[in-house]
Length: 461
Image (tube, rainbow, N blue to C red):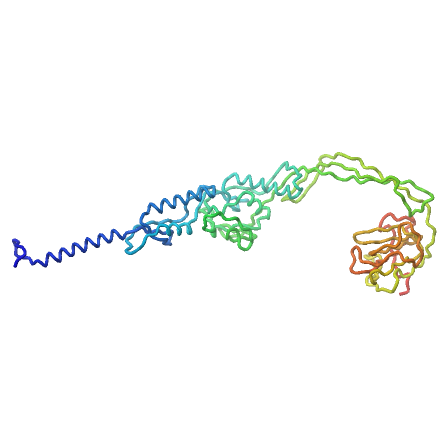
């Protein structure tokens, strides 16, 4: 049986069946091809996923950039190479949510900024040109407050180095505030960026890729936001350069100073020359002085007086001093000044005007000869100490723990006058003992007035 008849002959029915199958198969292939096409999204060489609608990702990146700009308060640009291409991916499952999340993780941004240059050496980037002036103001205020407690009036500021700005593009996390830049310069440039050639579109390496601004970390080992830091920075050629800034300030500093009171004397022939009384206590005066102070980096290098005004006159102290020579009760010979032997561990020398006798704490200190107690008091080096006047000689007893006599007391040779201690500048309990030859005045006006002599010349030890 024939299926159909043509001019050139008969064609079997199977021809039509095969042709129809091929046409249907081709149609199904074309249908599957066009239905399996998706948009492959990549950031640089990193494929982040596939989506059905490319415009959704474009709008997301645009919105992400706008949101980040508002968060930073800067005009930002998306810094990554975003590639969206259409491909046939049979069996792939588009996931726009996962793609958006991955883009957030890999995204970074850039913004226009200005590199502060010190004598032509790049230092740190700031957001705008006005930050340079703000940095100098912040540095000046910090030096003035630190050096004078905030009371100085800055009348002039001079920066020795040439400060310029270079426009560039950076990651917004790399930007410094004016205060932060001033703080780095105040540390004499001890921490700096290491960056690439500033002639290119500068992208500082090592910043975090998150969407939250990072605070600057000034750890000298980890660097600032992961950038290496050190005592020197490197320029594009790789040579090391110190980046420092020297700020000179001229200030007017007002200070109130004490005017020490003077002393006036009334002499009494019935009082011993070792005795005195205060008839009218003195009072210090005050004066206001205005200085012109020049500082470099907060360190004072010059000071001049502009004006001076007395705001309170000092009142002289009136003292009554005796003129009567004390009785020559001293014998001119001396006994050992402590009760017991003790050990001499520091002898008399040109730099040590006495002997140090090591002995137990609380041991009695003895008057080495008959005399008068002319002084009992305390000194930061001497500790508790007292002085006896013997006529031709004076004796001194230092580092005592307690005194058993008072000024003006007459004492006898061998009488306990104090207790051994370690007050003042002392290494353990001991008595520092001195003998001094009177200079002929019979008065004690200053600590080194009378010539010290070696105490051991009076002892057979």
